[in-house]
Length: 374
Image (cartoon, rainbow, N blue to C red; front, side, top):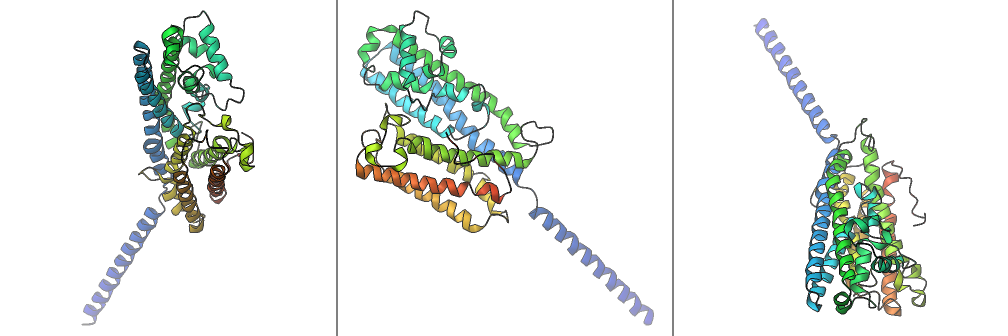
């Protein structure tokens, strides 16, 4: 009897130890799962679900822009010109969505400037474009590629298509070189965006897979710094360059500078400003993937108060954009309209300042000061 009781006791102790071990093992697995690094998912989704589609859309739009320029030059008319102008707007919208991305192939080889020369404080675009037309050289994409960046890209196309001094269809009917240059510039823009899209996958792989052998991103923190820098600097560019400079940083309506707007000739500035801001929000939220906002919710160093403030700041900016009617160029000096733009700048400033708090929270140094110059 005693032996049987002893055996039962030992059996119970054995089962108890086994249960304890199973519970301990399960707990370790749970902790391991909860602590699994999420940076790789964030970086991969940012590269593949946010940035890649933007480059693909831009390249598609520039291809259509080149094709539309050919159609216009084959049969110059008010109708074909309007179709080309609309395609330019669609292309610019796609480019404005790419603009905030401050890393990757678009930053190498001066490609960003070859797509768009801006800001253009001295109106070099019109001067260089007209100089090419007056020259006796063949106007090809290769010639445009060798020209000054101020005489190529979407800004030069805007000049040719929208400037009141030169946009008349009769100008193209009477001077074939205008059409030759128009097509050459459009073709060159497409060549550049094709290069950017082709080179992005290799760069994206480096961004999404940091390692000690990765010369650009030796660890996750370096890649995270790149993403945060894009948000902070991108917000600053919208606030300062796209809006702040034209409204003289909120001085008063009399000091507004409509010719400092990004696309004053086409009167498309507001749409481009909004498109760039929408990309900032996509970068933050992940465009349906695992975005920075989801990642930050898992970080103990980032409190809910800051995340709520960022959400509110994005919402406030979007609300103010919706309240402003285009075009900016013809209304910017009107006091009531100017007040709306000043309000938008204040909201953009608040958004940018909230985003600028994130690097410190994550113990990441960007090497960027939002008070730096352009």
